[in-house]
Structure formats: C-alpha cells, structure tokens
Image (cartoon, rainbow over all chains, first blue to last red; front, side, top):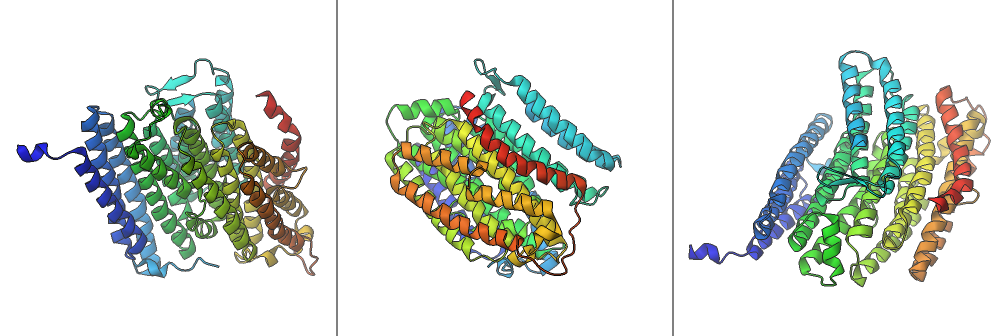
Length: 105
Length: 459
C-alpha cells in the first residue's frame, strides 16, 4: 500500500505527457501510415489517462464520462482513416507516406 | 437544440431517400430543410435575456450562436445550389456527399453554440470527420486520396492537441464549463496547468484554421480535394473553427498573460507574410486561392486577438463576405477546369470574358472583394479587423496587414488580367441556368452587403 500512496497526480501527468509526445513525434517523423495510426491512438489514450487522473483528483465523474466520448470519437476517426488508407493502398500499392508527393508547387 | 435536431434529421433523411431510391427528391428536401433551419433560428432570435441552455447547459443558443447558425445555413444552401450541378443527379455518390456535408454542418452549429469544452471537442470532430471523407471522395484520383490522407492525419493531430489542452484546463479548473474557466482566470492566478492547456488549445485551433506556422497542410489539401469540397472547407469549416476559437478566447480564456497575445500577433504576422509571398509564385489558381484563404485566416485571427473587446458581429460579417467570394471563385474554377482536362492554371482563364461573361464578371468581383477593394464587402471586413487591431495598439501588425494586402492585390489582378485577355477560337463554357443565376446573385450580394454594413451597428 505504501507504494500507491507515493503516486501523485504528477506521475500520471508525466506519463500522459510522455505518451502524448511519443505519439506526436511519431506522426511527424514516421513514414509508415499504419504506425502513424497507432500514434494517433497513443495520443488520444494519453489524454484519457490524464482525464481519468484529473477526475480522481477533483472527485468528479465529468472527465470519466468525457473519456467515453473520446473513445467513441476515436473509433469513428479510425474507421474513416482506415478507409482512406485502404483506398490509398489500392491506388498506390504502398502504405509508405513518401509516395504522397504529388501535391506541391 | 432544435437547430441541431433539424440538421441531423435532414442528413438522415437524405440517406433514407437514397435507400428508398427517391434520389431526385434529395436536393429539394435539403433546400426546404435548410430554409426551415434558417426560419427556426430567426424564430428563436431575441431570447437573449434567457438564452436556451440545452443538455444541462452544454449548448446555449444566444443571438451570436443563432446568427452564426443562420450564416452557415445560408452558405450551405448556396453551396448545395452550386454543387448540385457537379455531381450527376440520381447517383448515390451525390446523396452520400450531400449527407456528409449536412452532418459536418451540424458540427459547425455545435461549435457556434457550445458553452462546455466537451461540446467544443465534439463540435470540432463532428465538423472534421465528414470532411476527411469528402476530401478523399474521388476514389480513383490519387491527388484526392493524398489530400484526404494529409487532412486526416493533420486534422487528427490537431484534435489530439486540442484535447490535451482541454484536459489540462480541466485539471486546473475542475470543470469543463466556459464560465468556470473564466471565473478561475479572473482570479489573476495562472497555474502552469492552465497556461500549458491554453497554449495547446491555441496550437490545436491554429492547425484547424491553418495559420502559420501550422498551415503547411492547407495548400495540399485545398488543391487535391475535389473543388466543391474545397469551397466547403474554405467557407463553413473555416468559419466554424473561427466561431469556436473566438468564443473560447473571447469568453473563457480571458484574461490571459501578455505573452499569449504576443504569440497571436506573431502568428498573424508570419501568416500574412508567408501566405501572400508564396501565393505570388503559384501558377495553379486553386493553390493560389488556398494561400489566399490562409491569408484571410490571418486577418480573421485579428478578431481573436482582440476578442475581449470585439463584438462577434464583425467576425460574422467577415465570415459571410469571405465565404460568398470564396464560393464564387472556387465554383468558377471548378467549371473552367472541368472542360480543360482539370487544368486550373492561370492560363486556363484566358478569354473567360468571351467564353462565359457571367462567370468572368462574378469571378472578377469575387477576387476584387478578396483583395479588399471598395465598394466590395471584402474591404469592410478588412477595415473592421484593422480598426480593432488599432484599438489594441498593435501598430506594427497594422502596417504588415496593409502591405500584405497590397501584395495580395497583385496575384488577384493576375487572374483578372488573364480573364480579360482576348484569345482566338474561344469556345463558350456551358453552365446551367441555376449556376449562372446564383453566381450573378452572389456577386451582386458582395456589393449589397457593403452598403448594408451599417445595419451591423443596429444589432
């Protein structure tokens, strides 16, 4: 039990921030579309962790309900994203984003 | 709440009509529904004293929200009239696209009425997710795929950043309510949580409204997406994101430390300089208008900078006038490019005055309005921004705004001079009567709205 008492809100926040940062860097620097998808999920779930921690801190359930909203939205977003990825794969036969270079001046 | 129910039901009705094979009815039903929406919003007008608070106070339809709703519904109505020609009547692709636009419009209404950060996030997502699909809606076209893909990833990144900001603000305040956040901030104590949260929300919105240095996705997406979708993105999506941002920074995140307004000033300055200079070297008109749209976002950000003292009616006015000009220009590009093998370069516009006088004149009026030349309403929009910025004493910013407007006039005039360049063997461009009439009415509106601007003072 002693161990759990030492874990404060800051621990959760640092974890969330690190996961979020990993996700953001992944989207910006990775070139594989599937990995980029995982990074988006990582970012949204990092936010979920922070929301649940804050919810516990304030003793409200508001933020926990919001977490469910985020999960639903993330599912909708991924459904659309995967559809776009499938379509792209059919046309280019690759999930590497470096083939996406047609649009520039 | 009536407004949101009407739009959602309308979207579902459109899908139902598709299933029931009554696709001819789709456009009339949408028109009636949107007119009904405008009617309901006008009927709700003036309940300002006791604003409608819905969903436990998460949405409030006060006069500002209602006027945004009316503006978005009117622009959507015009969009449907103009886009009706571009999709073959009776196909299910057309009904799908129209339904997606309606669902996205629902998000725009949520964004103009939210009073709770949960609704802000939901509004942003309802607004964006259908537009990811719309941007990629030409399935066989790799350019459209690429546009959809880029829009999806950058849009999701922006949403996630916004969301983290919301989470941190909740951590600092203990509530998602805008009022609670405002009360917390008016105490004058800034915790690191709320400072980081506000900064993240600012960055998230900067992605959504495409201002520098977060604008790099916009030209690619605007160019690659099907032109009617680009017209939709540059009008309603942008307007709704600004409505949301204005509300957040005007009524909740007030007052913030000086550093935040300095950051916004820098963002406006970089946006205006980068977008206008890059637009000059573009040969593709669609891409050029994308940069022009970024530069207009820079101007509109001026309202957010002064949100604490500015009335939202000026932002609504700017949104309306820019949207009208943008609708005209993108649909003219669509019709011009459609008959020349999707070539939207400046050269494709040569001799347009002979080939289709109505399109040529309305395009000229729209571009002059975007350049901000009186007596067109785009001038007054910029005038309102600049007077507000002067009141807040950001003089360097005013100088940048004026100089970049002058640079802007240069690339608009290049297209206009192409339109009036005579060419031989000019075949006429045939467009339907409804498109022609709508374009003519819209360009007259740009002048009428200029002279009607004094009505704003009555509101």
